[in-house]
Length: 83
Image (tube, rainbow, N blue to C red; front, side):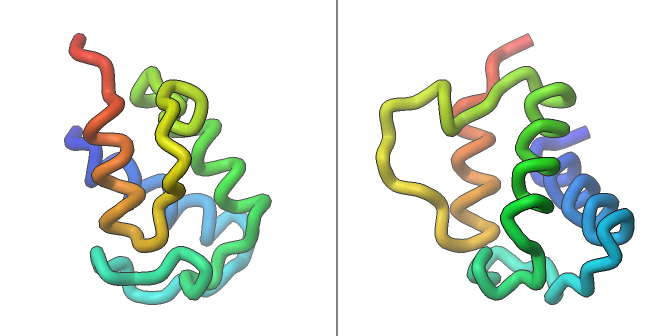
């Protein structure tokens, strides 16, 4: 499964579990306007670390946090270890 597919899948799964209505998942979706709260994003990041083997927020010195879903996906694609 691609990084993009993994991220989209986890977002949809967590939104459903947390009974949150999520906005359409496009690359230009601003994360703060996604309909997900900080708990949802914490769960997503933890699950993605298990699935992809990386937490880009601790694996990089980059201080620029993703603003859009596209930025979030690119961050994971950039930090994903080669298996």
